[in-house]
Length: 168
Image (tube, rainbow, N blue to C red; front, side, top):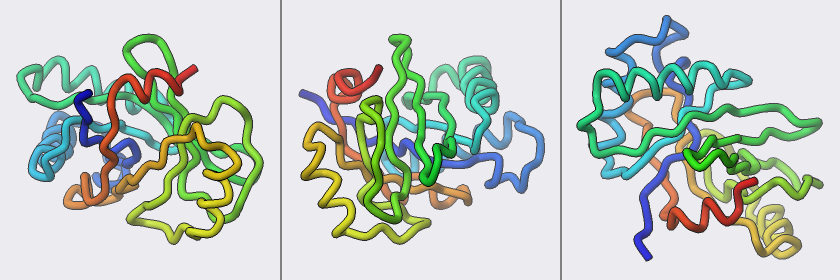
């Protein structure tokens, strides 16, 4: 089973200081991902799936030869925590808890939990409690990059079928 090096949580809009999405922004993100040896990324702006969809469209149009899986997504606020939704080509959505600060209750749509994030402190005790209560969750490491050079600073090694099995 081939494991992919994936960074499933990043914010290119913030990397570009909220400038309009351009081919140059896309190229900078892709180059950083490749420089860090990634197989794939998810573009996950806050509450903004359209940004990720446009990003993927620009990749397909201008960089179809790049050996990188690029997925659209978004980071959303749900009650007292944040979740990331990654839209998979198979029409499914893989959801995970983003940088959980405390042990929280969550619904059955969650397939993973960030256990490490380069932008936020995550309590190991709280993560261990949640993983013990829900052993089906994938333990994920993501950059949550807000700067180009941070893309791939942290990544998860995951088999594609593991993501699909936990997606809804």
